[in-house]
Image 1 (spheres, rainbow, N blue to C red):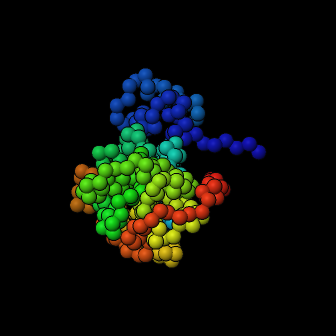
Image 2 (cartoon, one colour; image 1 turned 45 degrees about the horizontal axis):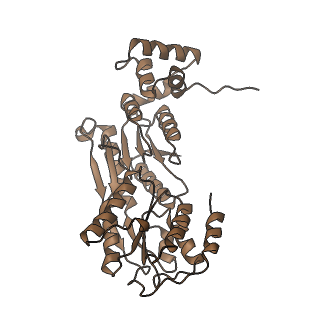
Length: 363
């Protein structure tokens, strides 16, 4: 038996060659839309036999007691822990959580936001990837409260809660400098995300304050994936001289870094000091345990839910107040992966072995 998927607002916008926000305004009769554009949207809706979600529209006039959480990756232990904490915070307030992952894909992100709104959530908590102004306009048109977490949007147009990325990164680099390191490598993620940009700036701050010039060969900026850790570390081990310390700016990158160092026979911290931004459970029982910048995801979860509830309920004028920006404090967790720099050249196994291992670990 053949079944047909019900046309969505996104389908109408695509057929009419306009944005989701514009399609939403035209179909709801709210806000300005040029007459020619409005007619094109109405024609597209008729062609697709588009039926608005009346249940969702009705529920938005009441309260559904549900909140959507949109994160980049369900495989990242940090995001899983953050989602669990947000779920607990919401449950304590009588709300349940709808969870979705975007894999940092802009099209998936847009579709997920529209789907969440279609399910009549009372609000969204969201780790933005490549959000466009159009998506924020759509949320405003739908009167859906939203709080950005972990990453900032340009000019902070909505309530936002992030970690002290720049200050934490600066503290991590300063710790290595205080031990006597000068050749400190930096492995970071995609610079399109504010958290990665801020951590990079913290590293630069510390070098500048110590009077050190930036050595571009020590900097590896790529993706937030373990395979990037493999490739970046492999490149760093080829340098003459190799770095004496590595600062890894994301826990997602760390497995690839450690794997490559171990396969190359590099001892920690005797031959190489290692520190990471983010702290996850396995760092404490790694050999050696990993020194890290710990970010309090429970505090971030509580702050984000508090902000969202204020918007939803309108308490203390929350529905109409300007966007709020908050930073959550970090904690420096000293373990045993950092020490004074080695005094001689780095001794390691044949790098061909490391290259083969890196290729095998690619996804």
